[in-house]
Length: 203
Length: 249
Image 1 (cartoon, rainbow over the protein chains, first blue to last red):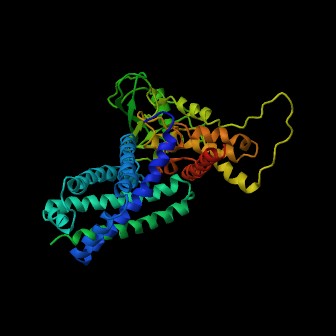
Image 2 (cartoon, rainbow over the protein chains, first blue to last red):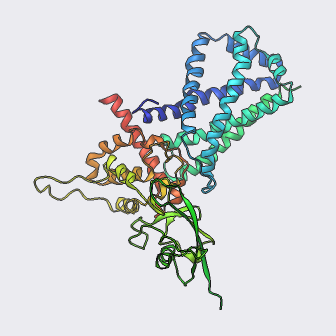
Image 3 (cartoon, chains in turn blue, brown):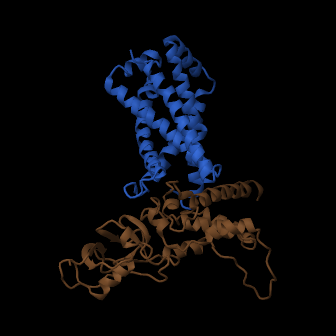
């Protein structure tokens, strides 16, 4: 990484994780949740997104570029640490390790997921309910997607906790503890939305 | 009557570049021993567990009351001071290792220079030297003095660096203690006058940005210094400083 920019890069990494990536994640899973109301409702939601003006600009500015930076810099951070949960088994140290583990799993999942959906669309496939139902018709893919979704929502929720510390919002131990419970709540809710949405594609 | 023995397994290293190896010792027990007095016993009679003559184990210590930080080592997997590690309270065999985050000099003694370099980098002092008498400085509110005193207990012992997963050979993170010292000196009514210099030092490579919030430091600190609170506080201060600098200067 460029010399002299580590403070800025870390701050940007932390910020992008929430705005826009985290918000996109919540929006994406909520849109998928439409599938629980039937294929037509989901296809309608997809149609609405596909008809947004300047869609490609929005995709690049709010999704691809932020994720690319977050992923590349995140890998750099993840492989810099010398993990020591064996000697220091504290909750926060475990979270520190899992944040890095889920970051890598999430990246693999996202690359696969984008390949199967967005890139296939660019190659001429049609994104709709049937596409996802088809992907999730294999048990292996259900397992892969379940792990991917949980890993992503964990990384998002725990990252939200770290964001609050990195930006000096939760400073003392009490506010940091309360933030732990709040972000745990976020994890449960967002994971439920994600998994429930996925289950709607499984016949 | 069979003599009660203390079993020690010590990670040794003959020179800064040689390969570490383990040596076992069995020394006679005395009531009230700490790890230092056990090491002194080895020094008096340098025989290993097999009864062979060996070189006495090298270590560093000064105050023997947990205020100087010199005798920090890894005892049964945890970095702490050897002087306050009582043999009666330790599980045996007692495993002693150097804090290998730092360059090992010999056996258990390490070179903590990087910590003093970090203090120099962040200017952890109050500059008052001048050519004439500057008069008395501003007074400090008592409530602030009380918590600042807690931060001033830092003895540069290195335990927080040993515990931190982000302090290692691959990273140049200055470590939790230095960030807490910036908070201490930026709170001092005279030290405050140079606070921007310390904030900018924290914003350089290897500074506060490298903290990954594993929070091991606050758990490991022998003086109970609220290191993570200091770090989060300095996160806020450096962010404010960066925003101000970007928009207003």
